[in-house]
Length: 153
Image 1 (cartoon, rainbow, N blue to C red):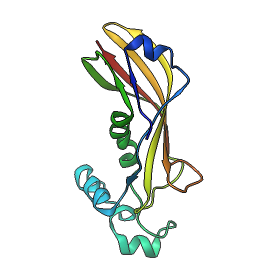
Image 2: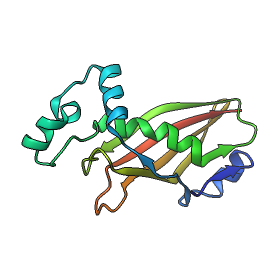
Image 3: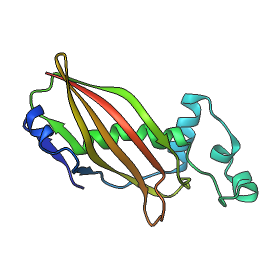
Image 4: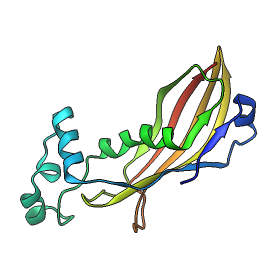
């Protein structure tokens, strides 16, 4: 794991364009997928019906929801990125998201974060992150997203 703790917003500005963090690997097991399906109501068989997914899916078994994979960015960012003096950090949204490869149940994933941009806003700063969720042993990322956060001081 690689993490960065910024001494403040001016410190963050000096690190634009740099890789800031790499999270630990996280196992995507069937319990996690089933829990996400239950919470979101997305019970599509390719995620939750293990036997049918083994028989009928092109992936040879169940896969994680794309939105489950995307939602892990919050966990991974908290592992990798910190800033001194911030009173509130919020997810402001996403500019672009692509799901490049499916995450098979039983795979491990992790995220990489590059700080693409820092802009002053009233009371704080808006940061844009190039986030990539990798699949262990995979040749394509599971998800590539441009994530926008706001830090208030």
